[in-house]
Image 1 (cartoon, rainbow, N blue to C red):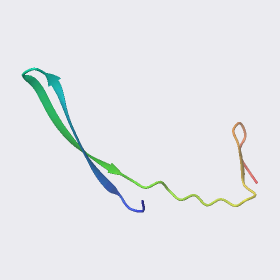
Image 2: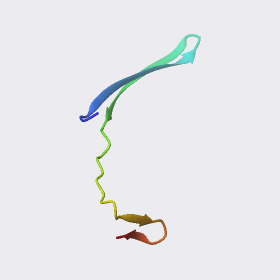
Image 3: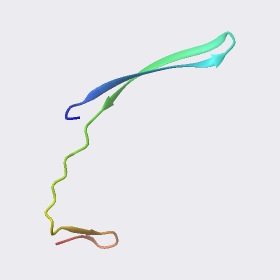
Length: 50
């Protein structure tokens, strides 16, 4: 996915004669592309190193 996408979410909840309905538009953004040199390391307790 290279662009922002929209998903429409609708739900109904309740029992008997007591129901409620709601809708929501959700924007889904693509994940960023990460490009790291092969000699780059990340150590959890020490941060980044080269």
